[in-house]
Amino acid sequence: MTAVFVDQTYEVHAEASPGLLPRLMQAFAKRNLTPAAVTARCEAGEMRVAVVVQAMPAEMTAVVAGNLGQVIGVLAVQSRP
Image 1 (tube, helix red, strand yellow):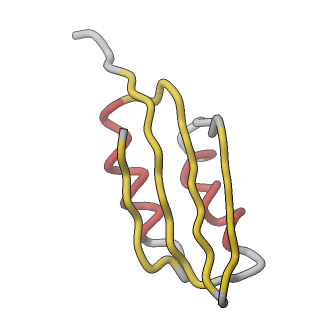
Image 2 (cartoon, helix red, strand yellow):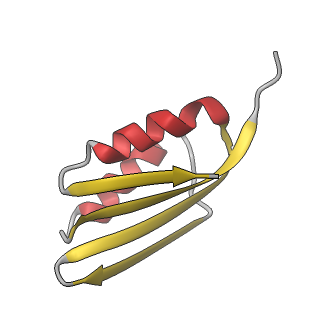
C-alpha cells in the first residue's frame, strides 16, 4: 500500500492567551510535522490562527484537527486541503 500525502490548512479560532501558540504547535511537533506557515491575529480578545502543513500523511489530518480542538481555549477548528 502506498502512503498518501496531502497539503492541509488548519484554521483555529480561540480565546487569546499567551500560551496558545505553543500549545497548538504541540499537536504537530509530537507527530514530527513541521508547519510550512503559521499566521496569527489577535482581535477583541480572540485569536485566529492558520497553520499550513505540506505533504503530511493523509491519515493524520483528522487526528491533528481533533487534537487542536482539545487545546484549552480553542473554540473551533476547521481543516481543509
